[in-house]
Length: 462
Image (cartoon, rainbow, N blue to C red; front, side):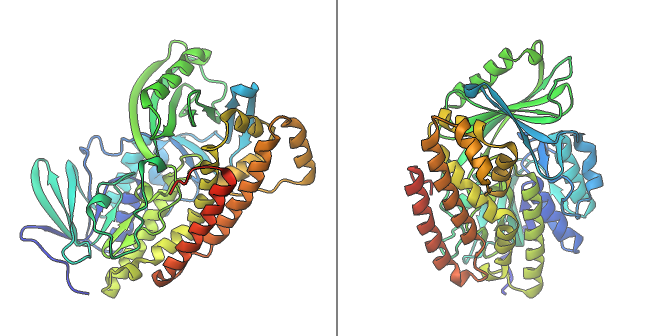
């Protein structure tokens, strides 16, 4: 491999990571622990870094990559007593208690962000705060660095590999010329949602401090959440598609807060918003000298918005593949490809199947969907939300059928959609091990998705 083009005065690293979030920090820590020079470029100040809008719920807290020890993260765990989801369905005057598999916790997200940064620092990562990346350096197809403004001064960073951890709708992906690689450019605003949250303090403990509370919004497809950091400190927020009017939906949250007696006299300490993907993972997130991780590659459960654990593992896999590529002297797309495979094998296939239900939700009446959910057994809903598939025995099918009288058309649609989701899952489990086989895999996937749109009656999402 030829050496990257080095500009006069450029800071030189083996790997440059853009963004000090979960995925970026785990990628950087993995590379640094192996003895390579790695720098994280973060647009925020050092005091603000790690402060992002998030629901604060952490699933799989017992199984994070070890490069940043769990003991480093535990100071941010404020509620480890949560063990289930609580779905409020006003249309049916019903509350569903849904078990959540695996270890669950609610965290102080800003403290968590600080601890992840500290963990990467412990591993030997350099941090450049107040650094806004504006462009990539790409002389001959391969990305060899980035251009940025650091504290108002122009700065160039040269690297063997650039890791994009800059979050949803990353500006880097607007700057890279992907015409000679398979990197997924089929990305639009309609595949993302906006999230807004407030940290709310109440005087008396809430009765549901052991649950993650979800509730559908009144105006459009979306949901409200109430996640208890403690018995008296609640992360209250909502997520909604980018196509919806944000202020009207935020009004839904404020109205619901006013109408809930447990929030009478509540105080708000922090308000923040962000974008996150509610789509399948990127088909491919590698390009010569470039890897995207976490939100920047669609590594979020599209039905729940959960993305912390997936981002951590994406960072680990990207870091390990980057090390292997650098050591072989080859940072081509083919040399980085195994990163795609590991993501798809771990959770990407499951997330792609779950996205089928997001597609369905755009084509069915919200009241019908809520009525159907109210008729389903809680453990089966949990399976559907987290595994991408579920199986319901004959007895439960009959019970659900009786409870859901009036929603049978939706049931039939959901049953057919489940079969399409299973087909998507099976196809993603056959993700190619060589980029040369990728076009054929992608063409077959698109054929499967045509069946999804035909079954659901939804407009194409991709």
